Image (cartoon, rainbow, N blue to C red):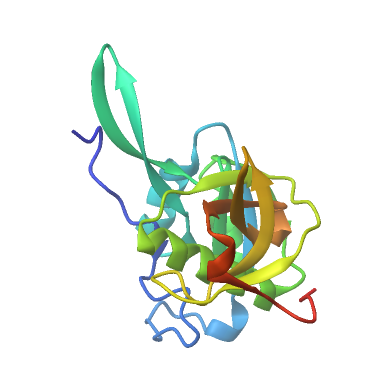
Amino acid sequence: MPILAEEPCVFPGDLLEETPNEYDLGISETERVWWVVYTKSRQEKALARDLLAHQIPFYLPQVERDLIIRRRRFRTLVPVFPGYLFLFGAPDERVDSLKTNRISRILPVVDQDELLRDLKQLSDLIAVGAPLTVEQRLCAGRMARIRHGPLAGFEGTIIRRRGADRLQIAVNFLQQGVSIEIKDYSVEPIWPARK
């Protein structure tokens, strides 16, 4: 039984696509850039609702989690990166987002293409429905790509966690990511390593 109805985690729906459809908000796509928003405590979803009401593009990656409250099991969506939301906006939209009073600080993104690539890959991995584990503070390791199966094409770093091999998919800007358990025969190394 869900606690709340599912809310949009991305606006517009094609925001993470290579060539998003133009939607008429009176702002050119060339004026918009990615910003990483660090919210006040537990304000990610409320900020997403406010941005949706103002028609400001955003991405809030979320995964399902089971909670037990008073011996009853509930299923809810929780942010993959607690406290973070990704805003794709022009400078005046960034100012509008600050007026919500839900933001602690906004971090500029130097490599826009890398962040978009990381977010797209994360979004695709969440869409597959695979069980994910959030990983903090990335460490150096071998870059690899999954060769076959429903996760074919996903790239990340091989890590060892609790005696199992995992592929860590990273959002490098945050130095955080998610991981999924893999078998060594299902991956191939990437040469040379991508920076």
